[in-house]
Length: 416
Image (cartoon, rainbow, N blue to C red; front, side, top):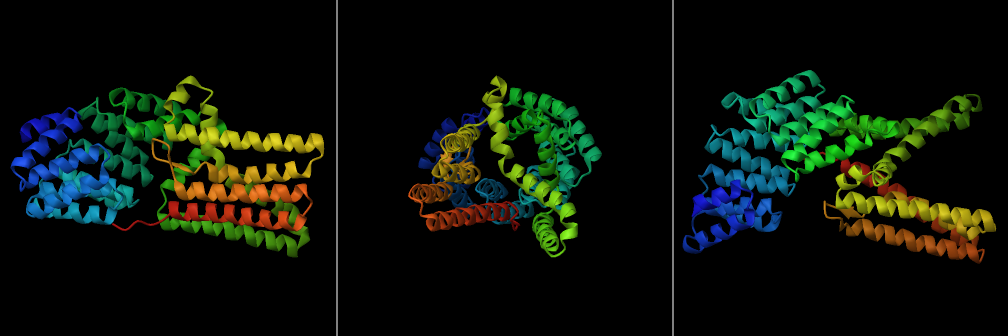
């Protein structure tokens, strides 16, 4: 029965494999490998909590079986518990240091934690056991790209393609390598090939969308910046973001103190402000542009489409309110337009995952800001300007807090 479950897993029929394994465990509830395989099938069906419970049970029943620890590491990694995933895969390697898959998983965990050199070392250790291992080759190439060793990365991917020219992950990896080089057309070809081989490969979907948006010159610049930032360590990125912000603040203060340098400082401050704003809105804005393209529209995930529609609605609403204010000399309409512009950035963050599930904390913030905007608009209509000022300050502070917390969470250092 376990052989049949293995065959079903190889055929990606995970639900049927789950049924077989549950029948087996009904007769043999202490079979640790069956618990581990069930955890694996549940993980591949995105049933994270059930998968983790099964994996823990497998380790409890088979503490000396490396596959049980490996499965627990897989589940923990999918659930973004990288520290526990690292501990589990290290135990799997200790129990059986000859299995190359274990080194490939450890390299993947290091990549997820943005520890590029450790990922490279782990992939190299795995390749010492099996030079043709696709997972280790791909992880090695990714680590080399992040370390700005592009030629070595390209050679590694070429080796992987030579071993298996039909491997979807290798084509996706090559696509990302080309994106890092600024070659979006070549990247598009390999992302398309990866999706031909596996239409559900999310990594290739993400790359395809980025390559399509890179056809726009402005987004190409933004993407190059994002990709360059991704090669830095988390500490370096935090230092760069905070250091640049403080430098601009110092320059602004110096311009106030010494008016003669203001003409030179002002363009820098304006350029910085526009660039920061562009990095905030570039993703939903250019996803919105892709909606006008048949191929691009189908490339976007459900989440990306939902974000784009909401972003477009907010932007259009702000423009309409501004037009009403201009045509009717209506101050309340101007206030509403301004607050809708403030809502453009956080509104893009209220969806999460590929299925556009609502991120409730983001939704609560947007709802709160919308209520404040309504109060400000009403206050302007009856000319209570003190309330308008207070509401505007509240929403500006909420936006600043949202962007800074989002940036810092995105740059957080994960322990492994």
